[in-house]
Image 1 (spheres, rainbow, N blue to C red):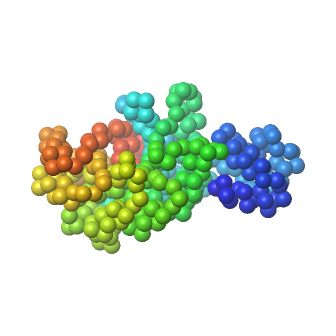
Image 2: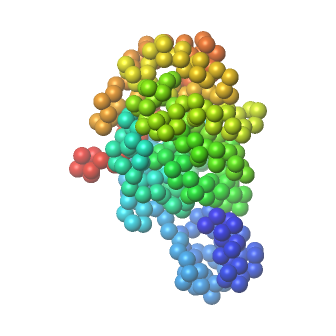
Image 3: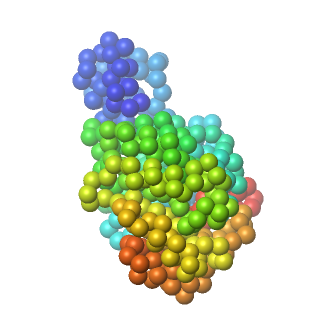
Length: 342
């Protein structure tokens, strides 16, 4: 429940308003897993809560550690579905990449998650609890470490599960609970134009990232079927309408694939396409996996592409692959059968 939903629930129980804050703090600040732990509530109230609601958590099923410090958590939902979430260290910063769906319906040809199809959406509690399970895991290994940034870039398309994603954002950023900063949360989308417009009308500002991956509709449609519904110009029009304060930019993610979108002509087209857009570009060298026929470009090709885009005036950054030895890098999250992973 969001704070507003919990207020209504508490009112229906006939309890005073201050109970909402108490319960919300127990759930999202102290992160208890049962009503019995809410010791400043009376025993009769705890009993009533147990009769009318549940407090559930994800189960940490497996933890993999990459040589670069990246860790991937395999988590099980109440109905036994598995999802993955990744912790990515970068100096004092620790970013968690969280999932919004079990699988994905959008069939991007370079993404391992697409091979699963869409199993189901996650509910807000399952999205939020990825953060809480990760923080609980960190408490056992690095007690002084905290998650500083969140990216909705794991399994699934966040704007395809719009209502639950927004509810999770409201929970995670509420001052009484986890109190995460809006400025440190990014939602990534393949380009669901209606979802981008809807997100822009919310009463909060979240960082927006667009998975672009091509500078023309022909190539993008081959890589990302969603482009047939919302071509690049429609997508860019929605991005330019997205509200940003003067210090923030939209991020365009561009997966570099050898022989597909990595030429200097592609670089020039990209710079021209995004000219005048308040943005930056993250270049992501393709992370190989057995579900796609593509290859990562040679290092000199990657560097030449970046230099050309920068030369033409577009802020461009190269994202170093993290966790690719444990299939935790961008585009690699997919749940292979247990025997194959072993």
